[in-house]
Image 1: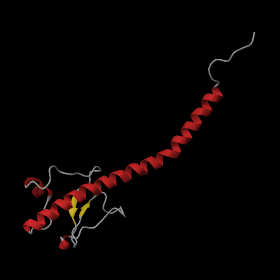
Image 2 (image 1 turned 135 degrees about the vertical axis):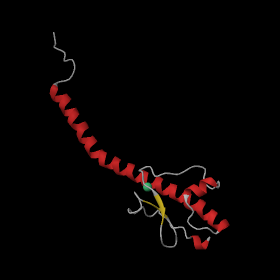
Image 3 (image 1 turned 120 degrees about the vertical axis):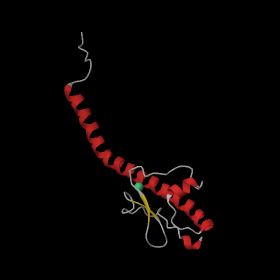
Image 4 (image 1 turned 45 degrees about the horizontal axis):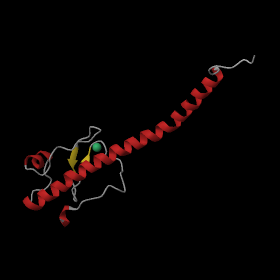
Length: 121
Ligand SMILES: [Zn+2]
């Protein structure tokens, strides 16, 4: 009668665990950077929504750099876009006025980070 092996040996189990661990270690930094990039892009999209609403508001009223509350209260924004990382939005001091984020604006998000020149609107 021939002996039949059931299950796996300890060496096989440890080998599989080591390979899975190596693959997870290699893939996690890539996943983290992709997640951070997605958060930056979402923040940028939020700021562009506010900037475009503000540009329309400025074109009609002449008031520059309106705050988000004004845009919401007057119906230019449906809801308050917020930075997913907890940053706060604020207007740049120099023209062309840009909405910046306290969390993301120091880091470059080129080439999708376009500048809206309100003087040309
Ligand atoms: Zn942000």
